[in-house]
Image (cartoon, rainbow, N blue to C red; front, side, top):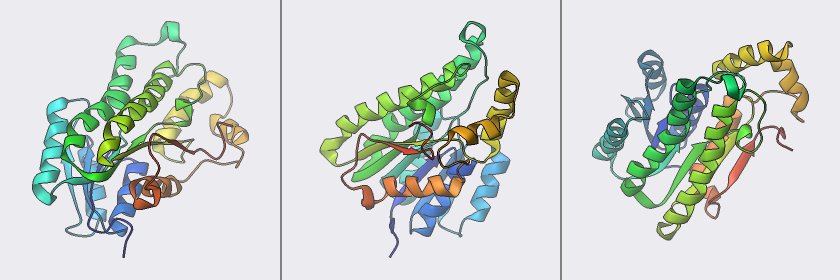
Amino acid sequence: MGMLDGRICIVTGAAGSLGRASAARFVAEGAKVMLVDRDRARLDAVLKSMPEGRATAMLADVTDARATQAYVDATVARWGPIDVLFSNAGISGVIKPVADYPEEVFDAVVAVNLKGSFLACKYGLPKMRDGGSIVMTSSVVGVTSDPGISAYAASKHGLIGLMRTVAKEAAPRGVRVNVVAPGPIDNEFQRDVERGLSEALGTDAGKFLDSVIPLGRHAKAEEVAETVLFLASDKSCFTTGSVLMADGGMHV
């Protein structure tokens, strides 16, 4: 018997490495999963990798209220009330000092990373089964920060405040709400970040980050997905309002 047998799940940012790895673990543990992303080609590839009948997919802009309501309603129409909502979609923005940071990029980062989770909770929570789980992806820079990442850090800090508020609102229904806060993951998203960081630092950002992570390396997406599975499952039945670090000790 799987940890998520019969559960109905939504994963946003499903075309990214953590979304894909988490969706795969959910399915392996008996769940049915709605995959949500705005990248059609990559989303189709993720769907094809899933066992037939265990997943479906929708293109959606998570910053759009109508699109959010649509993927929530489509999930419920297909399978019934939602048990797990994994709000994982995110973008990194650029690396620039705050005085030079483009306003339109700041707005876009906050819209995807923070408003996207707000909308997921706003429209998803009323359609969730009592006793369900909401997981949001923050970051190690949700509890720390560095120069040049004002938008990303602000959005990931904001997610923690959103999570704590929704956790208290949802608690009477037994719905748990938590944040997973990864450090650097060995994926395309992180490599894009590190290209900009390398230019800013004048050194190899990947090697620099490994040097400040006590475990000495980037995470694999599959490792962080195990943390997401824990929060999604009944194994975390008395955990809510929490920030679960999956950063190799980077924040310490």
